[in-house]
Image (cartoon, rainbow, N blue to C red; front, side, top):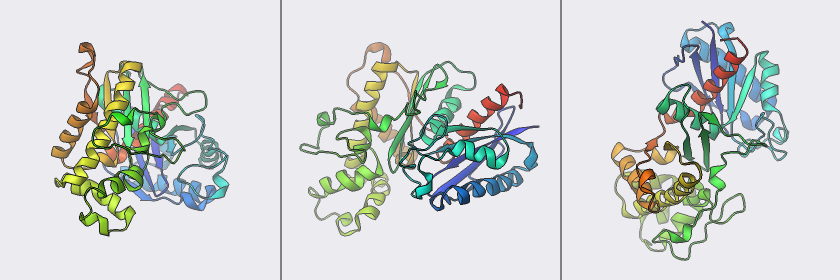
Length: 338
């Protein structure tokens, strides 16, 4: 049986999955390797080709049975896979600037390649996992990691937009001044905006803004003695263990998400809200607390919208690769390959 592959290419890791025409995923866990994206397109595309052979062997599938590939990468990029003239956010090699990574990979492999940005790919998988195939529901996904990305599935379709920037949810401005407990804060995002979702809800936001702000109130906290980047990474684990300051930082992030989701509810009236990324790589008890705080941070909803569910992104580590594979499967079906 023909299969398609999903390739989730990041700045530090690359993850593969395979799915057949019956929508059965043939690799259950991670098939992940350190990414060579920072060494430029030539090295990186060869790594993808080599990794597909490893993934095929892991799934017990002949390499020539892979009929299409779904690729996702960080942006900014066009909907067709041409990276920004400045290159991708996490691919620092200069030759990525303006590079058409979808076309480059298709030429390298001699197979059709579909493309999504990484957040849209994760959103597509989250939507599929909750609603199944051929759904007409609408969902809003937000993925909180080093930065903040997201995706909108409208009537079952990924919203890409004219230039491929549809679903850049991390850069939506929110009324952060209404969040209790952070008077006088001025959160700056790397994109240059003040008060967008990423400026409060990301690992970068913890390191740059939230941890320094709260350490003024907790000067004797052990994290005050650590190097800032490592201290920011340690906030999640300490919050999961019940540390008061670290939990307060995550409360601020949850309430920022609540404000953002309120805007999305009033724009799209979705069937579901989905949260993924490192923010929820925690215990189930902490996940439940965090989702409840998101709800608490949302302004009062209409009665008809008050019960919109908030889900944790399923299979968080492999969500991008799985979403990319589903996009490739749709391409293969349209082309009569699967």
